[in-house]
Length: 314
Image (cartoon, rainbow, N blue to C red; front, side, top):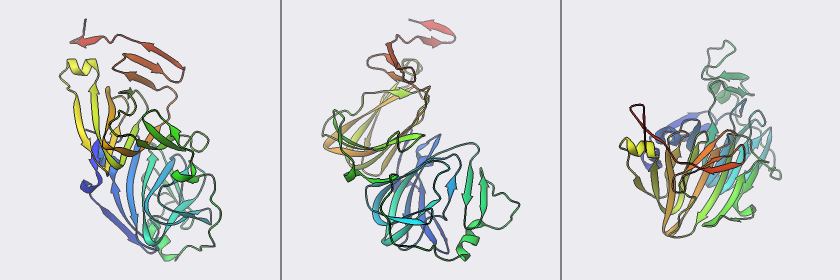
C-alpha cells in the first residue's frame, strides 16, 4: 500500500564501541524501491556509524530532535532540530556524534545495484553487501577498538548543512515550503519541508513514470487520496483514502499508475517531501488527463486507451 507508521516498524539496536543507535527501516516497511529511509536515534555522546562515504549513494538527513555534531572530513559542525545535512556521492566522509540529549534523525539514501562504501579508520571497503579486501573480521569491531573520534571545536557550518529557519520560505499556493536539497546542493534527489494550510489539497493528483516520492508527516493531519489510472480502474482497482498523522511515511514508487494527493485536516499539516530526479520522467494528471514530459519541457492532454484481453476499448 506504500504506507507505514514508525510506531509500528521494528527497532534494531546496533552498539559497538563508540557506536550506539536504534534503527528503524521505514522505507522497507512502506515499500520504497529505489530509496532507503531510516529513522535513527543515537544514544547521548555516541555515533550511529563509523565515518564513511559512498561511491554512488546520495544521503539526505533531517534532524527531528536532540542535537550534537556532524563530523565531516575530521571537522565538526553543530546540528539541531530541523537541520538538513546533504551528502552527495563520493564527497565527504561523515558521521554524527550525539549531544547530551541524544540525536534523532531521518536519513534518505538512493539505492544502487553496485555501491562502494569506504570506512577510512578501519580501511574497509564494502562493494554492494560484502566487505572486500579478503578480510574476515567485522570492520565495526575494528572501529570499536580504535576509540573515540578526535573532536575539535565546532566550525562554521558549510553549505551542505542548513536549517529550515535559515531558508527563505516560498509560497507554494496551498502553504509555504522551505527548499533544502535544491539542485545546487544535491544531484540525485530533491528535498523540501512544507507547511500546508488547513483544509487544502496539496499538489494536484499525479503519478510518475520514473521518479520516486516519499512523504513524512511531522505535524497536523492529512488524508492521502490514491487515484488508479483508467486501465487499473477497468481492472477493478478503486480509489482509496488513508488518514495520516505525525510519524506516517508515504512511499510512492515510480510506475505504479496510481496517482496521489493530500488534503489537510483542520489544523493543517507539516511534511517532508523527498523525490528522486530522473531526466526521462513522465507525469500523468488524471483529473485534467494531461501528461508532462519533464525532460523535454512539454505537456499535452491525452485520452487514455483501455486494454482488456488485448482489445482496445472506448
